[in-house]
Image (cartoon, rainbow, N blue to C red):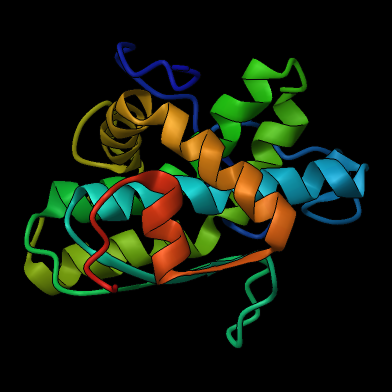
Amino acid sequence: MDDLGISATTSLWTENTDGTWTWHPEPDVPTIYAPFRDGDLLRVHGSFHEAGHVIAALTIGMGVDSVQLAPSEQGHMFHTVISGDVYRWSDYASCLAAGERAASKWLREIGEWTPERAWSIERGAKSDRANAAKFAARIGEPFDFLAHPWGGWTQACSWADGRLKAHWGRVTALADALMGSASLDARAVARITDLPNAST
């Protein structure tokens, strides 16, 4: 699952034309999600991205009010609504990183991973990455996004990988359910994942 080179001394970050930093180089494509081409594949990507967020949130004791494969009012293509307080930086950082990490793991498992799609997954998680920086600043946690391997986004992804590995069966079950209904409420999330949900 480790495509980050976490054990390496330095990370090969690349700067995109708009100033965004990604591990994988920016391809010559018209839109962020163009590397998926197949609309169904993009939808499954969304289901795994959101399922990753949900499972990570539940395992740190947060509530999940709903998860949807539909645009949010903020303009996000897919979204999860969580509630409750979080006190540890590592918990919330892993929750934010779990979306892109789940999507990447899924692509590798089905043999559809490419550097271009990996870049697309990273760009699709832009708001998650921004929220990590905002949360760290709010609680006074030292955070350098590009720091490697510790103290930045790479470490958040490492934490997320651990949670996903421990609960991957739950992630896939929830992603499958999302593909079938596109919207799940708090009770459905608790039933499918078999995890306590503070929002029920």
